[in-house]
Picture 1: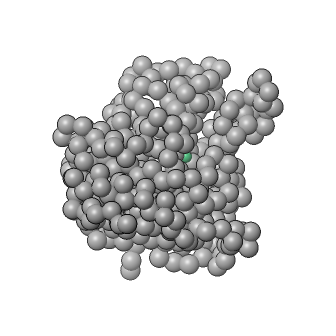
Picture 2 (picture 1 turned 45 degrees about the horizontal axis):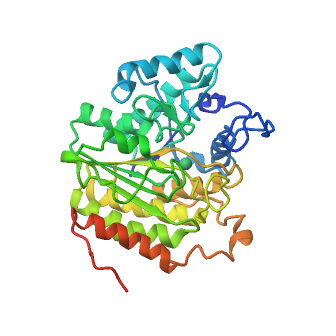
Length: 377
Ligand SMILES: [Zn+2]
């Protein structure tokens, strides 16, 4: 009997309180209080859709444990961890740059990082074939000594460091398809050749000064950092082209022993914090592609952790398609209910300027990896 796909969540994830900002900013001045963009809604609705569709019964439910303080401090300074705890124990506040800590958020952030760790254990111990962890708060922007962009502790970076230590892994690949650059994860492994970090993101979005194709790592880590900035308006075709022409050949040469994904569903066509046009079916194809890399190199060991995604209506459908792809099964939700509203968009067309951006990355990365470097004219 083949193993199921795991689904990890905890009710506490939906209790992390980001306050009453609007889109990404706190209220004040001309900004009227609203529900903050990083609210529990889009994530809770993922779990709700899995339940309502019955698809949750096809999955192995895994509960997270809390990360220990020592585990968090594998990636963060003790002073920063203490700052988050103090804010969480008192009035709440900002732990850096748009990194909102609510009352009690510290314990929930430990459980979020612990969710990524639990996912690694579940996959490494062969309890599940792969796993989707609905981690919240997200993590990929969090730097060593400060929170950033709604992220408190860097769940995926902590999980990778844990996997290196616990299982002695020497080749971990992290793919970050969140529409924003995974700056915190990049920083964590910038000089580390044992962790290959690949970020596909919207160019010049957030953080605006990070994520350039020329940023390839330093010292021994040179060549093990792969930034794929794509122009606004890129859809399914651009993402799949980048996966096929850049990510697959690099992964085939690197031969990962474990793949971690920072899964932000904010390249979606309905996202208020980015301008890409990936559809739910596109996310399914992206996930299937990554699963095939994991099956080629590491017996399918794949841990997918939720990051951003700010369209409460659409994120559940995108995430459902990802989880279907991971499991190889199809839910009863056979059609994307939003498709009629988006079918006129050129999501499945690779525009010349999108292709050029990808070929620019190929040119840079072909110094380190066996790739077809010649730009097509
Ligand atoms: Zn994001």
